[in-house]
Length: 302
Image 1: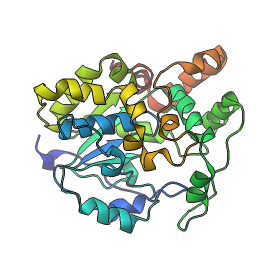
Image 2 (image 1 turned 135 degrees about the vertical axis):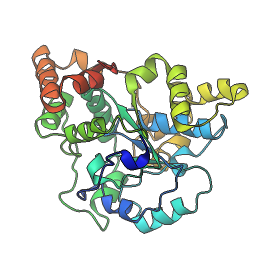
Image 3 (image 1 turned 180 degrees about the vertical axis):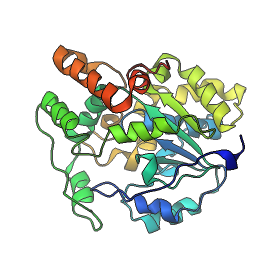
């Protein structure tokens, strides 16, 4: 099929809260080779941004990945500042979003990479992100001009209670979870959309990197392959996190090493009851359908 024969997604709404200003995409001037990395959050976003940076720059040391690959729909700094900075970039751009598809302006020429992860693993990582946020983080999100809706407060002490509230109120206090996964799953068969899964990256990072490079039409420099793998390893990213995480980790107690936390799955198993886990699994099937729910839980297509 040609581009003209596809039913391309259309933007149908704006999304605003303490984090988001989706209107930035209305004013964004796409280039044909742009790359957009998308997740709900805490599914390996920073990891995949680092992988793409390493592919584009042949395994270079100490790339300023966070600066090179901004979160576009984060409302800080204001979109005028961000759009100007991105327009000035001369390398192939790779940008981040946490929006559902229907709140984006979707380019048929750009390449989109969506990363999935079991919601329980997402939430355990998100709790670490939230509980270690410092006062500068709260001030930036709550007290700067442009916030729409309620502020974001501090998390409760119990991660199990945090999970219960998050699942019962669909992503609270962040943003809706199910629609994010659902909208990206719905466009997975478009020729410019590639689904990745955190578990598969953990299981076979070299293979997943090669598949991603092929999708993005980036030739791999084999003589630099060992450096690419080294710089994309969890230990290297944690040690050099100031280069790869937003603002060098300045918004979190402990800095970048806190932002890049454990990088493992299954921490919820010792804390969630079997009843709670089974209830979540049934909810996932109800919200996403059996095939998508299975992929989200395992990374396996059925």
